[in-house]
Length: 597
Ligand code: GLY
Image 1 (cartoon, rainbow, N blue to C red):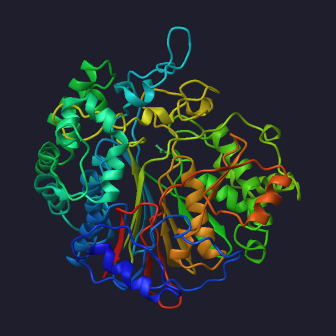
Image 2: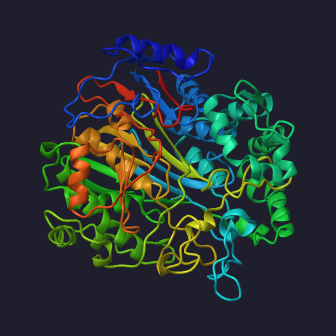
Image 3: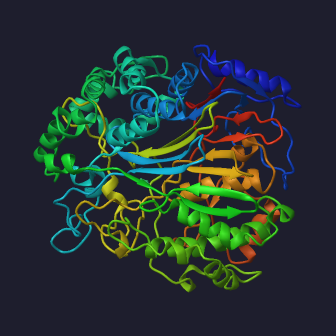
């Protein structure tokens, strides 16, 4: 009765009742999280509720000692168990990451890469880059045919789309430097889940079913991810014995098993058999990188987020710098004025993102200039007070419209550590293929590179020279694992999946709490908007604007495109009044859970 009981408690508390709960019968929660109805915050105009938007009403969860929120409830519970056993947030983050590779196989992974932003008890703020790298044999035009045309699907569905995975080395590095437990301890729960299996819920099955046809095309994938050729159903148990064996090898031999052992050999063999470029040298040469996070101030808050090869932190900070002087709180959440200035700031920050940013090992990223007060003032001065600026009038090359998958999770322990992790195999299930009997999906992160300047790939991704394919280079990302501090204390850990919309989703989660005074549930439930320069459209979830605001924005020249939903936020906020940790599962992803103790 996992979620039914929690949701029922909120239904009783909610004025007028009527909340519905779409969850199947589940096992009882292991943690002692408490729930409460959301407080009314100073939100204007009144938000359209989740019931009208056909989303379940998820309860606000509070905890004193530690909290984990992720897109899959079993992974969340494993993180909470590790914290309760005395592990710190890094131990829990690695355990959750490996668990997500089993129970959230679309996105959680060992076949991809990601970023980790850390705030440590000693006050350090750190960033770990374990993004995939292009194979050494990669070439700038490898996604094009002899006529110079980009070949549809080559970067997303073939072995040419696979970058050298970084997750296993990234987790190893984080654990060695800042964890307290052994790899064997933190990977054991994931091995058990893969070996013994786990009961699928409606939310899990919904994601698996996005790729049924692709699974049918690969017998080794179908053997695990289909039930005798048919999609798995809620209530059935999914076992992954091959993935269990791969995880056992990592447990026994550490990252060597992955990068210089049988796992690399199996991936290279499958890559060679399928016209891919991966070699054993690519795996042996793979490295992860500690970087300083991007840092900026906003209305008394300090934001630490992802530096290049992510564009996330830079674009968030540049947008916030532009809007900082405007009285958004006074204007109100998603009022005509606050939407206008937010969208115009994003339009300009994304123009810079798409023109200038790339892997810092290859490109000189002009971060100081992009985040300077002078640059913000220059861009602010170009915003017309009562009119949208056409994107054609904003300098730079064309911009991206990315695929919308990936996964983010947040962990806070009782010792003063906080960890934000966003990791990905890019599209749901990456290239949707598994090398031999390794049991894990391979990423299609090569699709995050520029396949050809100014030519969109199948997701509409159109980028410039700074992000062209080069051997050993990391593709530009939008992943934005973010930590927000206030008065020197931890305030918020946040992030999201969703390609380029990650940047807007993460930024709106911060603005909703820090600027509009929402609690974390209200901030996450609230409908979101996104503008990325090109296409020249404002993406908006249903209910994002009051009808009058919608009409006013259109009269100002905005083209508004309603999209079903943007990425799910996994955020934890420290309530400044009570000191309690607060979180909620984003109702956009019903398989997820926030839990603590
Ligand atoms: N693959 C999505 C991103 O890194 O932005």
